[in-house]
Length: 112
Length: 150
Image (tube, each protein chain N blue to C red):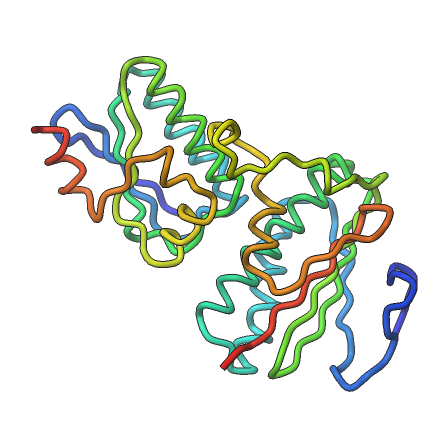
């Protein structure tokens, strides 16, 4: 899995490309928690180019979400395709995360 | 077919085809290649992307559980995978060399009070994405079936 990050205003956009499987969890954890440690507590995780996510990677997203929230920030999800959206619904994590159709929608909501 | 880790009562031979058996190291780097192999078989049989996604997810969760919780990442222990596939269904069994567990005591990860827990979703995902999921009495083998529906 490739992970790209960039700043968009006050937000850190973390884009995942490929499979967020067990072999990718460590780098995902390092990226997200590292960003929060460095003060980037407003995070949009772009899943539009991710084709898979396992429970371990979901756990990383939850851990990062809690850490960001604990520092007054957030972690939102953007752009999950059908399979990933279904997982978020099945696990009811759509009740925990705010999920947007794409990054721009997530950023626009924050700018309001 | 070897039958050392097949639960009592499981048919040893039938018309669903031969079992493929693999002994995997307790090494998470072995998971992706194993998934690729199984999905390749299913793809050749004409399974669609929804089925492939479901099987990959369930297989990933089962293999990771076996290595992480079953074998406790002990490199001296192995994970035993067997699978067989037909155009109608795929059967997968994953066994570890740990002491087993009681799947009935795993908290419901979808309960409101558990939504913020970062772990504990693997079994639930297996059950949601496969048509049958059963555990051996010892709790160290999971058997899963995914049917290819029209």
